[in-house]
Length: 126
Image (cartoon, rainbow, N blue to C red; front, side):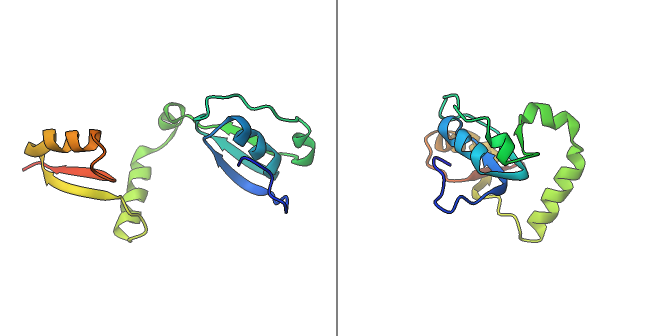
């Protein structure tokens, strides 16, 4: 979010990975009791924001999501079961672009590194 929308809508959940001005705008757009989840800072800039947003968005929180902090706190088996069920039900597209034998791993790794494959590659072990 780089700017405030004209209608000044508020959001219960904002996922933020840009940082800087985008993070500052997100903090001004979060609803009361809502959350801004920060999971990156691709702009590599610090936000400048008016702390008055706390008065306008009472109970709102800024959560710093870090995967290395989250993983030990999660039941990974339960998460993997959920992902597998979503895949089987057709509600999850894993974006697999190439399937091949593991013996062709060098070719596939080169193609991935050169961005000649969109999505993921799956190597079968026989």
